[in-house]
Length: 121
Image (cartoon, rainbow, N blue to C red):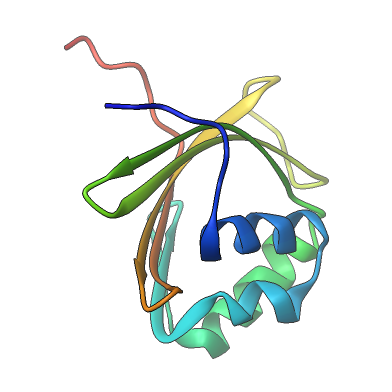
């Protein structure tokens, strides 16, 4: 599976908008019926996504430093170093999380963000 570090399309726009703390740009990357699953919480639709992003991304000045990008049968998997002013209690010094993007018609239809642990397999 080829691994890259360059993003394109709506996922690139999403990461750029997050890093610019631009709430309107972030929300514009999502389809109206999109969902986000973050820390085992489901956030459905752009109104809820807007509230979530306003508080937990823009409000906490979250940035994403992309480390790896994989295209797996059309799903875009992004491993990135996350930083910001959020509570870092019990988190590693360098927090690398994986974002799984579902995309259709150049809009994000689903986004799942997971702090993965190494697998023994």
